[in-house]
Length: 228
Image (cartoon, rainbow, N blue to C red; front, side, top):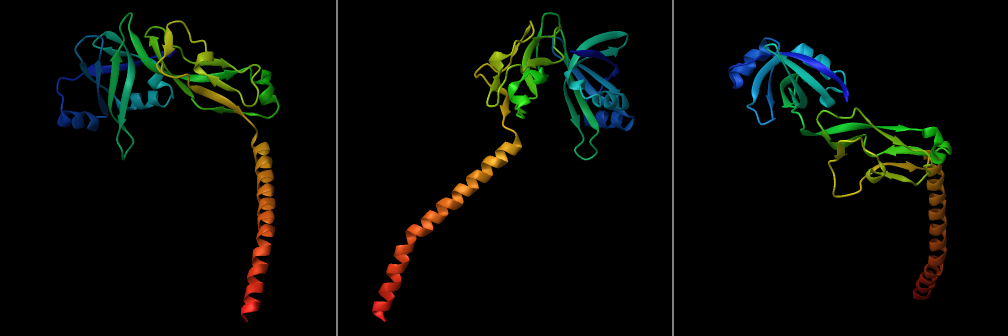
């Protein structure tokens, strides 16, 4: 898991559209912390700080320690709503993390040892079907990434979730199928060559068809001559 982020916050007493609009005018974003069999906590955070952390690219997959009234709550971001016109954050939801709890997260996939893949060395291309895996993890052991070794992979091979050794405390959230994470496909140049060969075959087939139709055309012409 990425290093925990820190986000200062203040509690808010009033809910509703009017109160939320007032907060946004002051550069604050209304938010809520829920889960852990405790009452939700309504808070507001500084918009600039939230945007800064969103720009890191891993905010939604990081533990966020929210500081409120001298206390620190460990949370995981669950949703950040954006204004459809201005693209500014207008609300945020955080899930409270509790000891021994489980959490469903999306963890990025990283591929290693590409130089040890015969298929890639021949010019094949790694076609990534899933850039992230949906995992159910212990909330205190969320992996920052899942590493997949492509050693020995040939063109035409596929990598399925059943081949991946997940970290202790993590399991796939999708359990009803052995889904594909990536495939090794032929290089585009080879595909083009195969496509051109296919076009030539199509032309030849067309020529044969035209030749076969020739006698019918001649017979029609003879019939017209007799009628004349």
